[in-house]
Image (cartoon, rainbow, N blue to C red; front, side):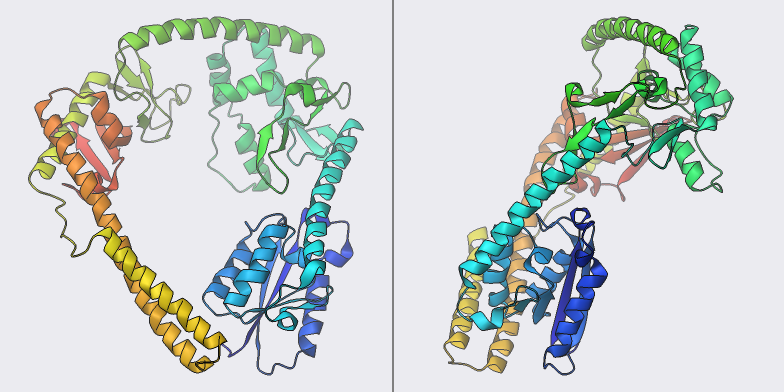
Length: 518
């Protein structure tokens, strides 16, 4: 690495899309020309770019990478086009520029703001800099609100602004056009539902006729060479299609909204906030058929909910400790309890699937799992997982780290006061950093071993209790088991919840038990 490293940081967000002056290329040109004016021979130039990230927070990959290099003392100067490129949050941006960068002796330059931290040794840049940060932060909030308002206005005009079209349509310009291959699948679903066919009947027909699910259809359109695609339709997907008003030509927008300014996370909006425009695009399903099907579906779902509530009460009386823990080893879907056995219901309509009609009697599964737990328990009781005692307690390790940090601060003060040279400071600080790293590592090992010791002691108690029991209990399952995958031939694969428990008695994260050897 060169003796002097200059980092040019560039950021462009969707909020800046209407301003050419904010483009990455424009920023790069301005910063590069400024670097040419600096009299720093043989400097190494590093570039960090966050394209498409908001400046309201520092959850950006490139800026995090840059800050990590600053902490390691590997960046001597940071140059940005203006303050807003580095960040629009006044408090966080000010903290880095006024506190962090001076601590690591990193120079910060904002070209168009005519700011160079080397001109403010011992100062923060004054009220002018503070006001610029506050203005940038307020600008970002105002711009976010304006963009939301503009999008809502476009939605109210019926302009299709959502990236992903509903299954059955494709976007052409600002309009929705029927995507005929997918539309045929939608019509088939509505026709069968109108005739009173169940969701299982519809799913079976879709699988038999090899109709791709919406997710798989999109994957095929993106890459026509993809061969292995699923035609297994889940009930929620079919139900979602049967309840979507867009199939009768109604434009629907605004179902989701941003959780907060600058955040990419969205939350579901109340239906009263949705935008609905009737007769917006060509309908795939007539309103008469749609209303009739929706009425039938609602009635069926109401009856189903009542049956589920009744079945739930029956299941409560015979609650099994492995509930929610058992999954199909092939398709990965949770297995459903039917009578006294767990079944893979996902491939009910797929006779050619590896897990078709896969089931496992609950009693048999509990017996195998209990035998696996007994083997683990015996290994624990026999002394597995004993840890070497440490010479110090936690406070002792903490005191060592505190002393080294005090020495580091004292060393820095001596440098500022001119008592030692920069070379002596660097040499002494390198030694202290290594010493602190070792002390922190020792402390981390102590904390980890202490935690392991606590876990092992707890596991030993669980093991003693487990060996006394002949049947599986909820307590054992909740404490030890994360998931169980079931395969044909009564084979199971257990993923243990605690890594410490997993490492005792057997190797690896999974344990396979065959019923024939049980």
